[in-house]
Length: 392
Length: 244
Image (tube, rainbow over all chains, first blue to last red; front, side):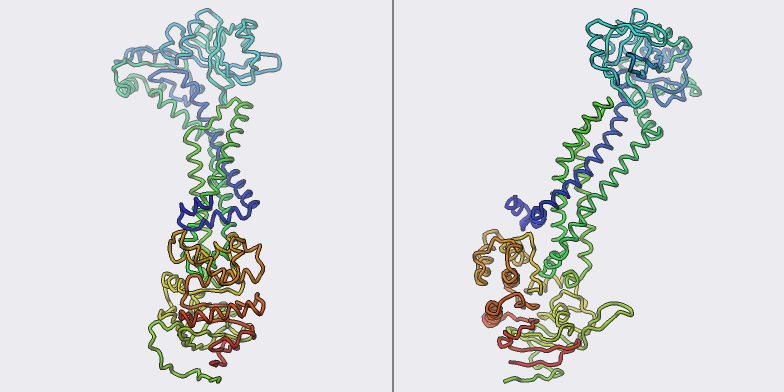
């Protein structure tokens, strides 16, 4: 390693030699950097899980345009929409088809000791397949029978044994909202911060499950446009055709993005996780700065000697950058491994989609290197201004 | 034999454009405000090439301050210090760095880098002169370390060397770069009589053969006879300056 670094740097790798000379201090420094990394990875993981979980129901759909009540920020809030808007939308040029989507929340006790909060979508099984992702679209025909449902098999707090029984045909009927519902199949969506899971029923079943709802007032209207139509043009035409007082028309991806922005910047849970990332980064910076500045302070006398011999300030910067890079890389490896383990644990316990997205590790690694280098540069300033004789 | 030199006398030999050391009217203070205390008073000192000059005096007399001012380790506040023809008062950092590279320093404490072996510490004295092929530094460092009797301690870390051995490594580091001037602050303090004398004899030999000038602060009476000149300081002033 020393020989390799000597060739690489064209000088003695003083930083490396200093670090390995005091093994216990090196271990402590690496642990500090690793901890900073874990902290940031976890906070980014939580925020990422929130964003990911917001997108899950959107990914279950496959529509071009989302028409919602004007006060709806997410799929699960806002007023009902007059079904009249759907007929108005169908009359707009470029629109191929449109269907109403009914949404409600349902508390369900699948077993005596379990309670889950489901987000329920009511959709017409005959017309809906074109508006939903393949896995769901293929199973919608099973909802043609009354009082049947598709259950999210990733629903939180439900044991795998439940789904085994379900698959083997045992125990398919359950009481939900004082109605008996047959779970005929499962789909895979995933739990979020609000929903423990998702349930799909036909629009007719939906209206029986929720007697206060009427067919003339869905929550959203999904719109597909003709294959050759320009989406932006159709969205603009829909916005013209539908009254902005009670209706908002957005391209489907824009609606999903707006939901994510709303939930991460305006809802408490999003703001909390956003702050978590900021605090994580700040604490990480302070840890890394402490590690580097302590190291520079401990070697100040030796650097002063080198300065007296005739080494320039940039030589010491080189040493500190060398240490910064070594600590950043050596701290990153255990940091990401432990973070990956913790992601698994938290995912398993909460059912939240905590995943290491590809761009996160390089971002954290380069962020750490940048912070180490910046801290080192600040720490060596003390050396720049001082007379060598005062530092011995 | 002993000629007492008149301190204020004008020097007729200011012809060498790279006169190693020419100090005139040097004053220096430490501290600020009420605590400000003058450490050096009107120092004039000229040292010729190849000389071995010993600076003596009680502690607190300003010897080390004078040494560090001439050696580019402290900013000159008032007066003039000319080192190898270069004025140091108001000199830029780049000039100071250039001048430092022409000097060899032997510090009171050895000031070795504890993470580096004897060889690597000596290498630091060479590497400052630019990138060197890894093949060429080794013989030079080995040679100087064996001259100082450390041929079987080349790859030892300072922690595994005795005080005297550490001091000799520091001397090797100072000399390996072939300096024009060697500054030494109590270089023999950690050495026994014989090796202390050996080191000073080496410095004297360097003066004779390469024209290396040496300015040494010492209390060590055992080596005074090797000096070309002894300068005595007291309370921040030069009080005696004699050729031997």
